[in-house]
Amino acid sequence: MKDIFRDKVVIITGASSGIGAATALEFAANGSKVMLAARSEEKLAEIVAKIRALNQEASYVVTDVCSEEDCRNLVNKTIEKYGTVNILINNAGISMRAAFDDVDLKVLHSLMDVNFWGTVYCTKYALPFLVANKGSVVGVSSVAGFHGLPGRTGYSASKFAMHGFLETIRIENLRKGLHVMIIAPGFTATEVRRHALLADGSEQGLSPRKEEKLMTPEYVAHWILLGIKKKKRNKILTWAGRLTALFQRILPDMVDKAYYLEMSREPDSPLK
Image 1 (spheres, rainbow, N blue to C red):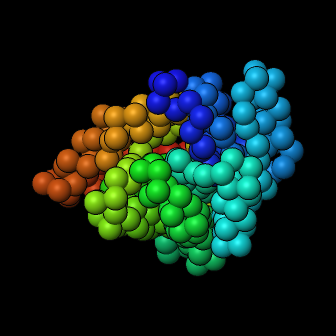
Image 2 (cartoon, rainbow, N blue to C red):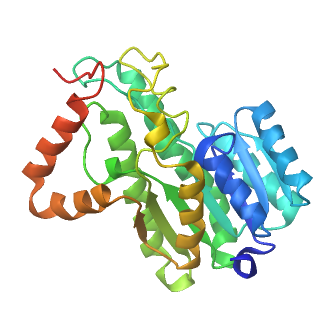
């Protein structure tokens, strides 16, 4: 893929760990110029140093995607440094774990601010350059964006919103050559579950899943690049996710029951 991605300028949000960090390393290994964005300057600096130690090109901008001005600044700094943007990876995201009956609505606001508005802000300011380059905009999503997940109202709502937004961006730019992809990994071994918000807005701390058995960030990163190469529209990385996307249209009641059963089996499940 080096011939495809060599010298392409790539912005990646949520790039301080997990899928974002792995994707930055993957793009850099394929010759791209990578701009990393996240809130933790220390973690960003570590990853950029690792990339530069391999004689690959990377920079970072400390960014809170909840802030429109931060997202505008991220794009502006990328243009100052590299002159353009070819690919935008909207990866920044947070999760939650609480029944809607119990949840403080500030939790849902937080999920929408990061997962939805972060995507909107970054896409808004990068879009003119992406369109000019016939580039790619990617939303890192979840099966929760195809079918509601119990105990994850804010997460599902934000991912459904992301899907609707990106699908509309795709349609509006059909004649301009812009590529838009939504990628839905399965459960991936990242920090997202440890930082998931509980009903009162505090972080969960411990993951309810066996992280060592989950999909790796590197696997997801590989498929992000491959999906862009192949100009995929939607890329769902698990058979369970693909079946969900299919059966939620023809047997939605069955999918409801399957996800209720799945989520209710988690340790300390919020489902009663």
